[in-house]
Length: 309
Image (cartoon, rainbow, N blue to C red; front, side, top):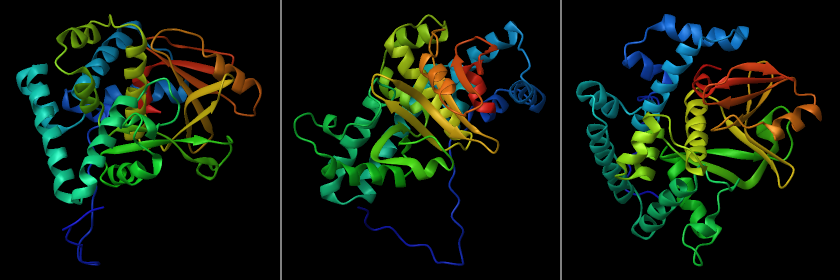
C-alpha cells in the first residue's frame, strides 16, 4: 500500500522510531524533576497514600496533557506562549502533514480509504463499543476486507495503535488474542482531543476546570488511559463478555497480569470485582479522577498514576 519509499541499506543504517512524549516526559518539560516523578512511582510500588494537594496538582497537569499531548512542537508552543490556541494551531499543522504523508506514501486507490479509516479510528476511539467496527467507517458501504489493509497501513505508519481482545486471561496474553477484534487509538492524546473537540472553547474550559461530565468525559478518559499505558511501553488488551464482564484494559507486567477499569467518576468497578472473585488474578486497578485507596484486592488510583505503573 506504499509507493516510492526508498529502502534502507541493511547494515549501514539503524532505524529509530520516535514517539510523542509521555506524561512523565511532559512533566520534565514543565519543570518537574525526577524527585517528583520518583515519588509517584513509589506510590504504586509501596501502596503509599497521596496528599490531596498533590492529587489536585497532577490531575490539573494531566488535564493539560490531555489537550496538549506529547508532540514536542505542541508542548513548546504551550510552554512558550501559555496558550491552548497556539497549541491547536500547531496540532492542525501536524494533522495536515499527516494527511500529506498519506497522500505521498500510499497508492492513489488507497488514499481515500486510509483517510476514511483514520477518521473512523478517531470517531470510534473510547466509545461504548468494545471492538472497532469497520462497517461504521462508511455506513452502509464499508466492509472489513475493504478497510483492514487501510487500518494496517495506519498501524505500520504509527498513526494508530491497537488494544487486542482476549479470549482468555492467561500468560502470555499475546497467545489469547481474538482475531479481527481490536480497538484503535490515535497516536497522541493531544491530537485526538484536538480532532474530536474542534473549535469548542467551552469543551476545553470545562476540561481545565474539571467540570466535564457524561459519556464524552468517559470517552476522553479511556483514550487518555490508553495513551498513558501505551507510552509507558505496555501492550494493551481488553476483555469483553457481553452483559457479563467488560474490562477496559489488561496488561502483563513482570510480576503479574493486571486488569484495569477506568472511571470518569467514582462509580464501582463491578466487572473488575467479579473478575477478581472468579479468577486467580491477585489484584486489579481502578483509575478515577482523584480517589485513592485499597479495598477487596482493588487499588483505586488517580488516573495520572497510569504513567507510573
